[in-house]
Picture 1 (cartoon, rainbow, N blue to C red):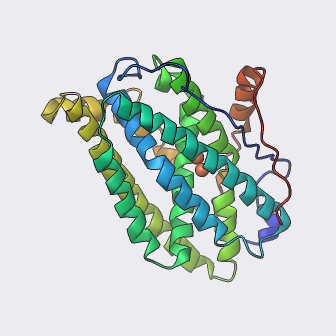
Picture 2: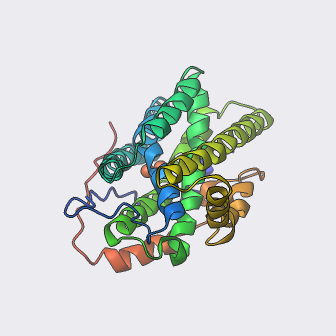
Picture 3: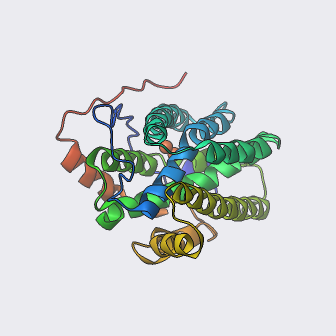
Length: 290
Ligand SMILES: [Fe+2]
Ligand SMILES: [Fe+2]
């Protein structure tokens, strides 16, 4: 695919919204509707973000040199968004720790996975980022499209997750376009093979690590064994069934001609802006890339 025919919408504006969440009052330990398993999976996901998103930024920026000006600008806005996400999830994770959770084991696992990827050539880090950004974008889509995922959650926490989801959708093409640019001289079959292999690898790790992380946090709430597995798997795969519901969008990644913006879901962004944008919301101005 030529870099001049990228399907990222030409008018798309990536707008960092510099917001802060949950700084006022302490949230209850089981902030997600009093549910052990719902709180556990969202806390386990959040544990990955501070280090994970810093890694995404590093991986994409390593290939910014020589990108077309529009993409270079988008990389800059993506960097700002992810840096603010890291800050807010770091604060969110501190509140989970204050509520009594020990996130040490989960954080160590994230560091371990990142160290393995970083030990490989930089293009592998970019490929892993591109695959994981598709993952976050389809999770974000599902989170915003179906209000049942955050039903019963504390307001500030739900606001944080929705805000993050919006920006993940907004910048979902950036890592992919950077990947297309970085591999523009590759034969398409090589590009497909590498991206498919990397997606399968990160998916396996994502499912194994997040499930193990959530089970560990559930253990800290005294829920273990078959009961823990049943509650968690039911929550993830049946109702509300986030993982089941993203399966089709996940599989689309392997289709020839895939691009994150083949699925234009900017209606979710407009709906968010219509609801939340009415509230004064600081937006950080991002100048042109230099
Ligand atoms: Fe993010
Ligand atoms: Fe992202």
